[in-house]
Length: 139
Image (cartoon, rainbow, N blue to C red; front, side, top):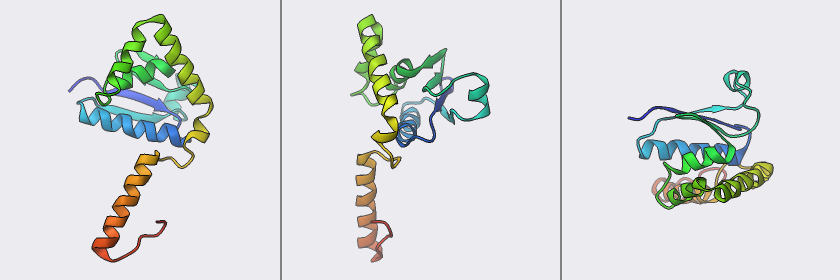
């Protein structure tokens, strides 16, 4: 297995937490070990990481550059996005998209789940209700 990546993320943000869980799953699926740590942990604070996404891999990647590295182990549909990092305009575009997402991250997904995950969970709950005859709370 390749070296372990360390991903520092905003654990108080639903969007960031959901994205982190997806990145860890992608890593597991594609043979990359990812250890996720909150930006509020003492290690991140001692390194001065502040409040942006940080990925420690072969080197340290910040913000949009971290996104590009994570996309490189994501589903095949996302991998072409890593090509944006090869050009100056592409890197600028990714940096700008990251800035927009970061500025709005707390309102993008306040519940901590992506809509698809919530829908999947509702479907799972419905299936359990049919199988068990018990309605789960909150559905």
